[in-house]
Image (tube, rainbow, N blue to C red; front, side, top):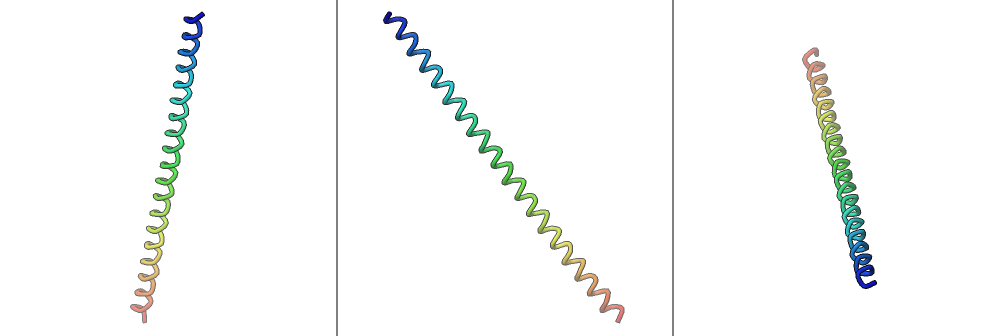
Length: 70
């Protein structure tokens, strides 16, 4: 009987440890996903800024051309 209960306790500990590890893995996965979302957003913002700068330069060129014509 003593061996049986000891074995059961050992098994329970193993299960709990496995569950904890699984939970930790899930958390890590969530963090990586969140991080990749942040990176994606960062890249998008960078692209938008570039587009904005490009548009402004284009406007400046148009103004310059108009001045040259006159």
